[in-house]
Amino acid sequence: MATDTDMGTDIKNKLCWYPLRVTYSRELKVRDRLLDRGFSCFVPLTLKSVEKGGVRTVKTVPAVSNLCFVRGTRAGLDEAVEELGMKDYVSYVWDRATRKPTVVPDKAMEDFMRVSEAMMDDVVYLLEVNTALRAGRKVRVKSGPFAGVEGVVVRVKRSRRVMVELPGMFAVATSYVPEENLELI
Image (cartoon, rainbow, N blue to C red; front, side, top):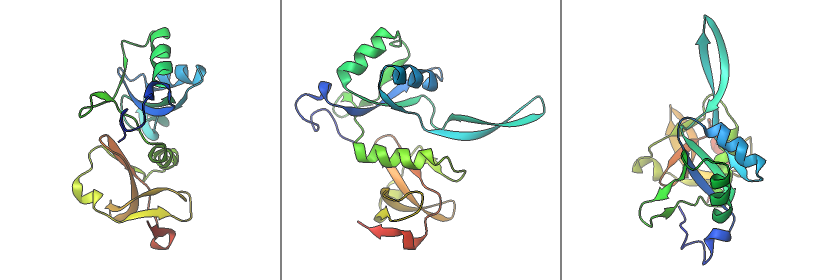
């Protein structure tokens, strides 16, 4: 994960992806309000079956609780959060080593969004990534719905998948990817 010092001298005015911690399950509300302000936002969603009054329905809900990704300048984001009155329930995810807000690299975020937006039943979110999973082969998907996605080959739920990790946070693993659709990096 990149930090302010890795990204150059004036990070406050550079467009970056920032993960925001959003309390009280307001991820979608924060996303919508920041989208209205012109920011690019992303909340990973998944389908969830809910039964209410004997009727089963499928709802789209956040896949990861209390998290919203926003692309913008840090100064602009700080200003928007203040003006919209969201300061009490929105904060940056902090990098403990540098004590600065975490910045997600563009390529990692693009790949993460591609896999998450598939919203397939067998896309798996891994909230903790052990070192054995990180040791897999680094690959790029050549064709199919995940073409261009780069990650590590892992076995999850008995099938070969490509895992895209947001270091220090979590990872998402694609649905099954055939060996012939992969190329080593």
